[in-house]
Length: 297
Image (cartoon, rainbow, N blue to C red; front, side, top):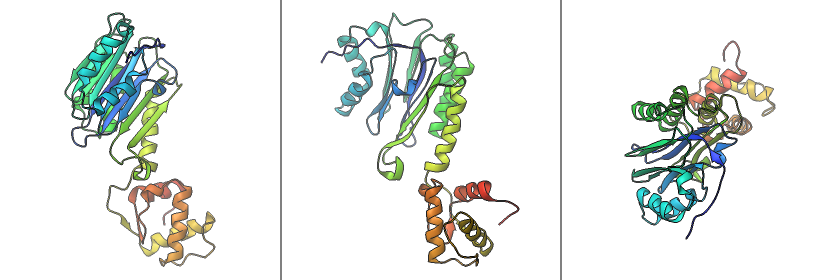
């Protein structure tokens, strides 16, 4: 199949990577371009991840994922694009497969500075950059960071931006991470899909959104807090004030208190952190206390 498209020029720096500890796949990207997250990143859990940029061909994403699902390597995907796309000299693309195989392509006609790096489990690329130090910072930070995978991708993006980034300036950034059953409620593989479409400082804003995602959409990772009588009394007072129960606090846990608290969790978008019983996720507790607390429960 011929893959032909003359898209806009997306001056961009991106990293496509696989987390060796979990097999999760992700793309982080930033650009002086409106809504870069709508065009550049593609990923499918258990298959691979792709970034298509410069005079991008957005068909590269779905086509590479299809080919990798059929057993083709990242390098074979790029070889096919070189053979079938008449505009390949103006394109950039980075691909990482679920096995960690990687490849990157920078066409000869991409605007300077442009280049790419492919290592095991990652592909980094950029065009209209301030220089090669941008990619150096991107790769060095990602490989040297001990943060969790999504935060590591953002740390790499921030380091590349600090090293000069897109020499035209800043406008948008995006983070896409997929992992088996890690989506909302375990019903999809799309774990994190965050976009900052038009901001003077998009990468810090993307970091803020990731922190909110961790709060509202991550599942509990710490042992639950056993609620004391004092804790329960404070929660019951909160449930009364917020209209989830009409009883005065007793400090005793019962089914009605549990149902009211579960209702509050739903209103506060904390349902992924619901534990049930006279226990509470510590992150949810800190959020409720920080939002509605006072002198102490």
